[in-house]
Length: 404
Ligand SMILES: Cc1ncc(COP(=O)(O)O)c(C=O)c1O
Image: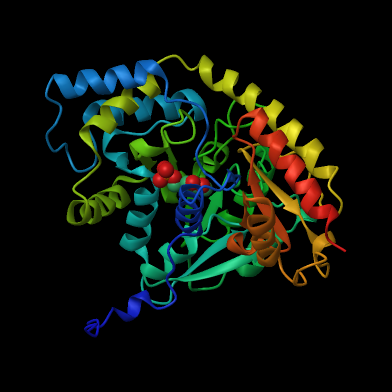
């Protein structure tokens, strides 16, 4: 007999598990069932966490850094974050203007929970990292999605930002470089956005720079606060070690902003997780303070993988994409596949149908553009071995050729 489940909070209506977590589990299940799955959906890099970082974590555990840390992070890590923000962005923050979270995911949520009243609006350019939407909803806010199509370089145009701002707008979330498109906002782009924001003082700005070091032109993608210091008092600059140092599972991220906001975020954190792992924080200190040459070397490797995959994809009938300036993702236009069908199967009507077709017929796991608020696209990652990229390319080409 199955007992009726006690009620859930109305807060949960319309909240989903993140698309990434669903696909990760699906890929694992399929692999466990014996299928030769290639995961092009992962947000993991296929680089190892650097050895000196692992050594620092080991040493920290051995010397007894195994207790609760300060809720907002260890003084050593906050100091290392301050030094990194100065080095990479010429931004100078005090110790009480920094918070360390369990990944930048937690830092983002702390900020939204601490600031949103029911019905407050948050502007989110699309394509977007999907958790922004549900985090806003969980905090009682309303996501306002602004489409940023390919012909705008997948970037938010100042006039579209201006048009989306209402008296209820509390935040703009601006991700640079953008997951999933890989678009990068240059200093000029940010300066144009800043001009609009300066006209709207009650608005907070969340600058998410998680992929800031995975860029193929410059050394580091710029962030809003360094472009327009007048915005600094209402900007939360967010980043983390996950993508920069291939430390996805260590769960360390950070935010820098006005002390009053950081203080409120710290209260949220004190009542939810009590702070980040002591060992993870020791590892992040080593990553941020250690040699940085690795970042450029890895960006060069990723650029070669990008070029390899872009070439392969543009050779597949019905698919097209351009090399992005950052991240390790490609937003691949699949408009050419919509309306087609395999000889033995159903017509592909949406990018989700196309992603399902690739999973069933080619054992390829990809995201549907719909998960990022822009269709018809699929998002694939090129943070894979060259052999996996080439094999994925063969399967994609074959799968596309079967569609009529
Ligand atoms: C744009 C963006 N922001 C934030 C995050 C959260 O990363 P983490 O919590 O690992 O720091 C991710 C993760 O993939 C992301 O893609």
